[in-house]
Length: 153
Image 1 (tube, helix red, strand yellow):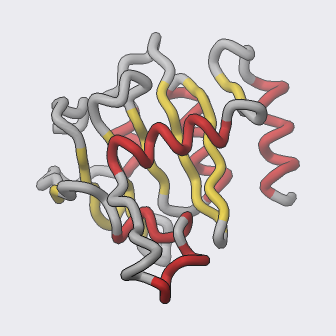
Image 2 (spheres, one colour; image 1 turned 180 degrees about the horizontal axis):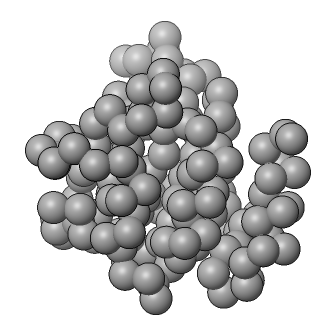
């Protein structure tokens, strides 16, 4: 099943308040996230990466800090999020990022369907986390940015 088909299935399983794909607002949401947490490229001095801006989030996180966490499966970390709150979740595929608005239960299903590194962002832009997965799909490392304490710390 292709990823977009999995997204359509998730839309049917979860209430719209628990899982949304903000198509019309996606660009402005991604720009807000970048404004707060991603170092902006200087086109004049970094011509080599001009066309690769979106897929470079992982290497351009502002004030990137590796979280020293106990070894748990990444699903167990997502359970630490407030189950009643929605968060921005960004999955990166090739040169494009896709943003989703979801509660933790829907987020877990989304991340399982994506099978890729992902970002979880507080909707008030207090904190930003980047979950890297290894080749087997297990948690490799978690990084944070922002002034707020994440639920994972």
